Image (cartoon, rainbow, N blue to C red; front, top):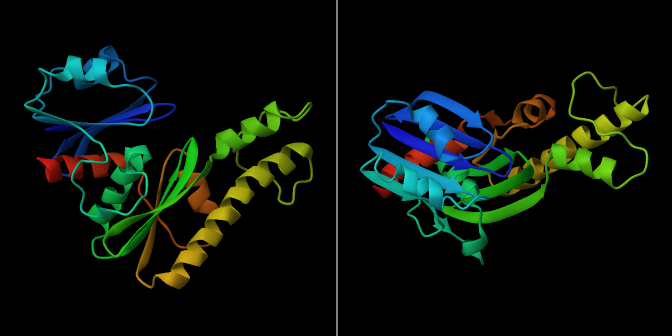
Length: 239
């Protein structure tokens, strides 16, 4: 059994795999050893892979050192099923690389626009066998917080359903402006890259991906476990 750990900016996702099948998964607030140990329980783990874009996982690595025969910390120097065409690969978030690997796992033989709608919105292009970079912008919650924190009177809202567009109230104007602004941004990214790459497949993941996918007019494939699926694939790829 494989254990995939994705340490993000606001939470950590852990998933157990038997082959390519998710046996169990959980989202926890922080990657402390006690929480990971509770998730593992008495299960027998053969291999572990860890991806982190925020916390230093050293303490967790020490805790897991006797839990599995193989423990792989994903870095840009790990092995990937694509070349990395990026000028500063040492600054590249490994979750973006794992998501790209997940796209290849689920949809082999294509070019990909990989969207991760979490704390930040990342869009990455994998074309011609190479990770070609992408873009990073604020995600939904960050955009809502920015409007609240950098103004005197605008309330802090979230991406609730049922807002009018155009907004008929300040609440709807904020919600529609943030949510639909992000949707229009993604629509234009997809349109632009579909014109350049005929075999392009767009995949989306992340905490806000479901609401975004429901509002976009462009075709995209929703994979809620794309990053941990990619990690599990890369664990085999680097074994």
